[in-house]
Amino acid sequence: MKTAAEYRKHAEECRALAKQVPEGEHRNQLLEMARTWDNLAMDREKLVHNHPELDTSNNPTKAHAPST
Image (tube, rainbow, N blue to C red):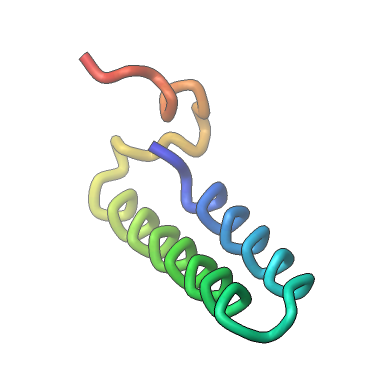
């Protein structure tokens, strides 16, 4: 599972792309995607706060390990 920081990075990438696109539907979609990534980051932080054992921020390989 990704970390909140990774979700925020995706959000920032969407905002950076939106700045390069003319106003209109594509820009709006990118900004909506950024909001979604930000919301995922907040949800992830809440989840880790309530379940610290799910914190993968100090062990990134654990976040990408397959579930068994």
